[in-house]
Length: 208
Image (cartoon, rainbow, N blue to C red; front, top):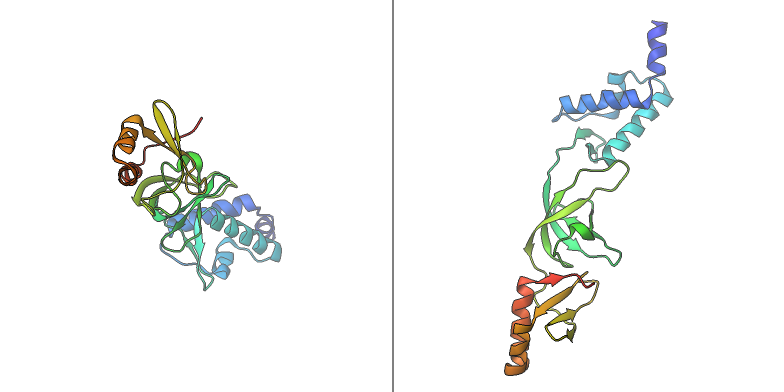
C-alpha cells in the first residue's frame, strides 16, 4: 500500500495529462467536477491536485476541454467551420469574432483571402500549434459589410488602382483599362456605377 501511495504521489504532469486525455475522450458527453477528477486519478496531496489543475488549464487553452460557469469540465466538441465577423488589423493579425460570442480567432493576412473589414465570413479552424493562439482561414465571404469604397484612383497606361484605407483592405483594387474608357466617355455617374460593379466582384491584387 505504501509503495502504491508513493507512486501516486510521484505522478508527474505528463502522466496526469495522458490519464485525463483518455478520460475526456472516453466520456465525451459527461461533465466532471474538479473533485471527481482528483478522485479518479488519485490526487490526494495539494501538489498533485495543483498539477491536475495546471493540466486542465492547458486543456482549456488548447480547446480540448471547456469549463462552464458552474466549474464543470467537459470534452470540447470541435466545430471545424464557424461563422463570424472579420475585423482587419494594421499589423496583419486580423481576427474573426464568432457569431456565438466565443473568443476572437486569429486570421493572418495569408489566410484572409479577400475578406474586408466588417464582412460576415465563414472560416475553417486550422490545426492548433502548441503554445500558439487558435488560427483560422477564411473559407467563404457570406456578406459584404460595404459595397462602396472611397480612395485615390492612380491611373497608368494600361491599368489603374484604387488606393484605399489600409484598415479596410490590405491590398488595392485593380481596375482594367476597359473600365476606365467608360469614365472618360460617360462621366462621373458612370464612374460611380462601374466602380460599384467592380467592387462587388472585388478584383483585388497586391501592390508590389
